[in-house]
Amino acid sequence: MGATGMSAERGKMLAGELYDALDPELVAARERARDLCQDLNATREREQDIRRGILTELFGGGGDSVWMQPPFYCDYGSNIFLGDRVYFNFNCIILDVCEVRIGNFCFFGPAVQIYAATHPLNAQRRRTQEFGRPVSMGSDIWVGGGSIICPGVTIGSNTVIGAGSVVTKDIPDGVVAVGNPCRVVREITEEDLERPSFR
Image (cartoon, rainbow, N blue to C red; front, side):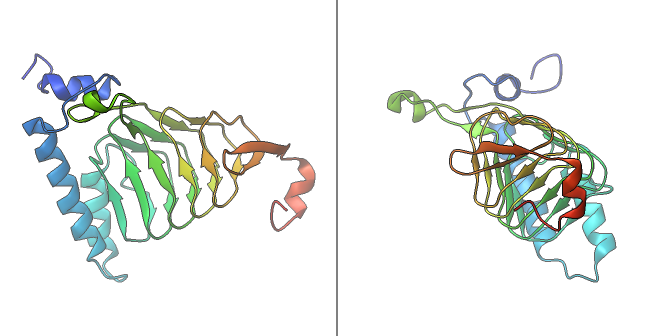
């Protein structure tokens, strides 16, 4: 353990450097998160107080106000920081080997996946090491179902990501972006306040 109370491998992981995922501290942290996710996913809808306790324990921040429809899965949970009233629909996944920061009032459709984790292109290195890139999202974002947010991506506030998109590069504030790879198709305007959807 270093002076900060974390293993060298955990420090490298959070810094986006190559690290050994089989480090005992990291293995224990993933086991903790998987146990908490299993507990969360076993709750019934009427057990909101139990869910709230699990979510507060699981996440690095925001578990006190997140609205979660299980099942949900993550790698560590402690590297996920949520703003106020974030909503996750069914079957969302976050691979949080680096920090994943999500702003206020963001909505995620079913089966959205957020990847901070990635792997080296070199096959020999990939056998023993991995790394990550942090993901950052502003406030008031709607991510359509089945979308994938790739490592290192930043998404601006007041933006809509269309269902099934694969976001490989940064997306600015106030736009509709769709596709694989995800591309900006237009800005969100005042007229959109009168429309029921972004089509």
